[in-house]
Length: 452
Image (cartoon, rainbow, N blue to C red; front, side):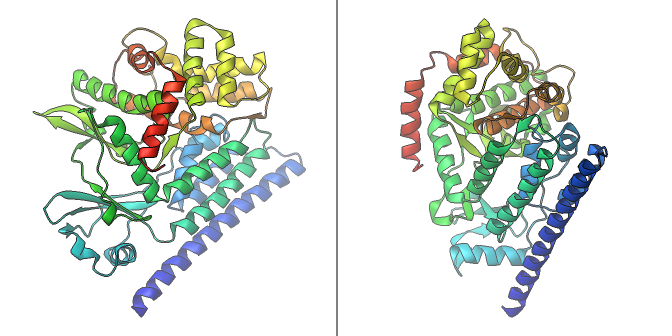
């Protein structure tokens, strides 16, 4: 045991040292930028962006997720920074079997292995906050055990301090938007992701929503094998989304149609979104060799919105569709934008027409034309950035953050699949007879049932 404690101590010391190096490097960049401004020198944003990516690229963990998310928000960081941050990879090196045994013993007690029929030594997947091991119960049913890395509470707090430094760097460049609410929103949601008990409740919300839908599968949680840092669920077998890229258009369209429903139905009827539509969070299940449904696998990043915000989303869509300026303004106010002027509304509409664009025309079409998945939204974000420069800084409401991130992520999925659908009709099916009061009642019922 003494050897094991020493190894854990060394690992923790190494992590503390890495955070110290990152903090020092970020502080060094800040000092360099401050000096450049003091002496009237031009700041080389491209060079600084590359330096920041190099600094953050050495730090596996929560900061990777924060940086990638930040890169999707128009003008949250300069375009040069967004391009570099978008290239960061969030795959953390997995824990070895020795660490896994210690972590499992800490969560389920000394006899933890006796509670499983089998437990794979090697992880099936490793991500920024934890890793997933395949296991089975004593009846042979396959299970997925999501185990959080050690000391992630302290790691998240350390990373969020660097996140604050990154936003502070941006504020020195006379930004077009005020990132204060963005910082608060991202920090709150990332802290929530550490609580696997909360994630289990999120999964229960989605099971309630889709319990009668044969096209969407939600795993069951085993509470007796779950804790705040361990989540054990039924294993849902399926194929990666990208494995269908070369399949017939009909099959790709079917997958995209179900994905659209899996994302928009919870939002339009319950005010709930999956805030991380990452390709790895979904698999496809088949019947007779053909794709017939989607498995939803991860519920750490779920955002629950007030019913009034959802009403604003519907109003903005209908306002753009019907060229109803009063409805558009009302929608932005519901979202939390302050100090709306004609010029600001026109700029916000650039982004709104991009997000809603595929939903505004009644025809079969790709989600976007002539754009690669990695560049989705980049051109429009730059136009918004340039226009806001004349008015900024504009304070972006916190509700915008994950709604925007999820819309960009979902659009990228459709681009990967090269799907061609009538998004207008799919969306209008979801908002048909929308009623804010009905949504509020349904949301309250499902959240109460899930213990949220």
